[in-house]
Amino acid sequence: MGYVERDRLLTRCEGSIYKLVNLAAKRALEIAEGQPKLVEANAAVKPSTVALMEVASGKVQTKKSKQKE
Image (cartoon, rainbow, N blue to C red; front, side):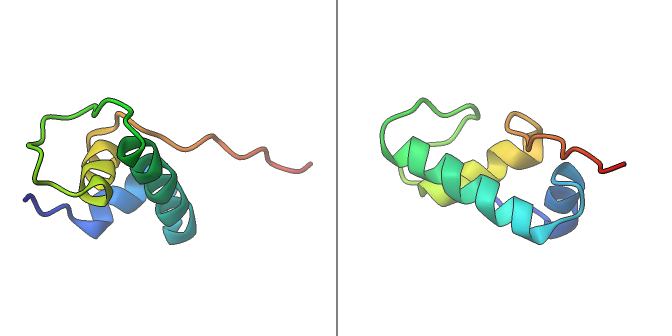
């Protein structure tokens, strides 16, 4: 199991821990339901860890939020 630094994850989610948690949770559910993994990981790695690894590698990203004028 790999360790993913929190700072590295937050830079991928616009600095928002809320967006990071939502993105990782949604992706982990997709993986648990049978979607293919986007990073190399053996079968023993939990879907939540795989989701965080995907976010850290830049394979899964959040949508850019619209700025109000």
